[in-house]
Figure 1 (cartoon, rainbow, N blue to C red):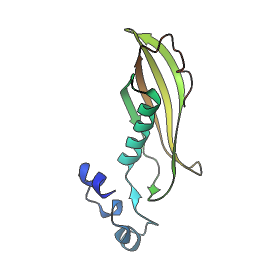
Figure 2 (cartoon, one colour):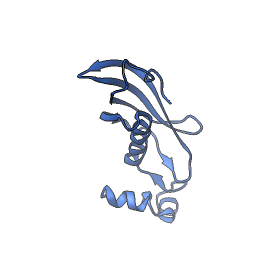
Figure 3 (cartoon, rainbow, N blue to C red):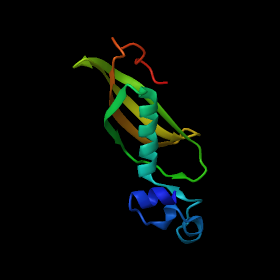
Length: 126
C-alpha cells in the first residue's frame, strides 16, 4: 500500500499507516486507494483478454471504500462484440466489489483482440 501511494504521489496516511487511519481518521483499517481498485479492475480485464488482447479504453467510478485485508471481486459482462481493422473489438461493462457484493465502482472497457477470429470465445467474461 505504501509503494502504491508513493507511485501515485498520494501522501495521505490513511492509505498506508494503519494506526493513523484508525486512531486519527476513524477508519476501521487502511483505506485502499480508489486508484488501486481501478488498477486491479483493469488488470482483471487484461488477464481476461490474454496476450493477444489490448486494453484501449478504460473507465471506473469510485463509489465505495475498501479496506486492507478485505477480499475484492471483479466482474464483467460483454456488452458488444464487433470487428474492426482485422481485430475483434469487445465492449465490457465492469464492476469492482467487495466479496459481500458491496459495489465499489462500476466501469467500462474496450478491448481489442487480434487473431481471435469471428468473435470466438469473447461473448462471456472468464
